[in-house]
Image (cartoon, rainbow, N blue to C red; front, side, top):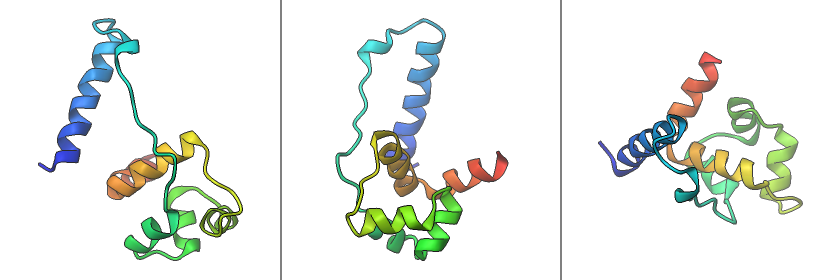
Length: 98
């Protein structure tokens, strides 16, 4: 299993401990990157702006705005984009099941 997979499993165990009241949620921290290179991420996945937008629930206009610097994703969207970057297959699977 890759390093990210192991971290994901460990995070799930920590979340379960918090949900069960066995751990204090204030003791856990996450890091949301300040900047996300959406264009590089999209190109790595070999997707057009339209394909990336459709696959992950964005509008093509929003993708263009981010890539051209007219706007930036907010914190929650940056976190979602980071998950897409790390495990795009899992995101596609989760969205397909929704």
